[in-house]
Length: 456
View 1 (cartoon, rainbow, N blue to C red):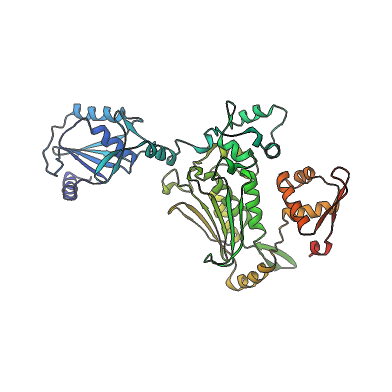
View 2 (view 1 turned 90 degrees about the horizontal axis):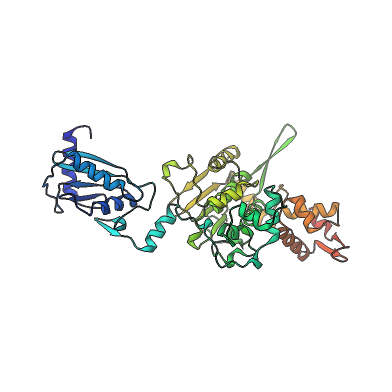
């Protein structure tokens, strides 16, 4: 306060309001003071006024250095310690408690949370929920006790090692231990999300939902996919899913043609990585990616672990182990720069991007095409999803034209995709009548059947 008069005026307003979410009255120092301190620290902060009765009458209290020291000792002995400020207002002592940055806080009596005008003792599930919300308990670091090693996907493991440029000379479990996804003989949830054949069998929030709508109102669905391919596979498929559905505008200047995609690849790829890494896997939901008529929306059910004012300046991954594993690959660059890369990519490509934290974390990238171009593109998209960017499917066809004897493993290495992804694309190409296997698995070769369709 700027002066004693200001403080007294403020106190008069507080007395008129009475006790509430941010105000607690106490006639004197008692054994419950630690309960009030941790309750405010676990909530949004508040002020305890010593020398005022519950009914709001100023009783006053003798304020001594010994009293202030006693209160500071009580705050220090909370777990973790709580920083407080004290202010004298005549014969009333105000104890200011800021919202804690290291929740949950406890005292000898347990964990408390400020709820309205009361400090309620927290139940076990409430304590756990607060610890999860503030990142003290991290999903990816927990052991998946029911994991069956028969479900370990060796192909995904080898593919990851290749992407991360990690030697495969050591025993598998030693590598997993070095990656910190093996605790004793048990795989962590991070290990399951990366290397299980079907992560959903163990983690129900492992899937990613992708939907392509014709409109912005989410009425007409053009296509829908739900995938469960592990962290790397989910990112690869989601990026390719959008890539195949994003048209390109051509800008011709001085005999050169510049391709301007409706959405920048760097932006939506980073947004997908961000959503999957920061997702709250305790929620039991899934990451949702939507391609609408004039925007892309990526929804991640994971609240920020820090104040909104620090967004874009501070990075604190909800799943540190997932982030560490992914940082070894091409999908993740320098930590803490993802949001800035999204913004810069959109700015350079003429897109508007917005971030919303209302009930989750939403990233929305608006189209850079005007209405007339969108109308033209809309008709085209109903018959074919064309893009000048070569898809995985295109690459497979091209490589098999060049060398019909390529194996799945060779294709995976050449295209930098997992063998599981290659296997699925080949199955779809065969189903569509574009690809046919001639001869046996070992000595045979691939034949491109529908040359005309492929060349279009």
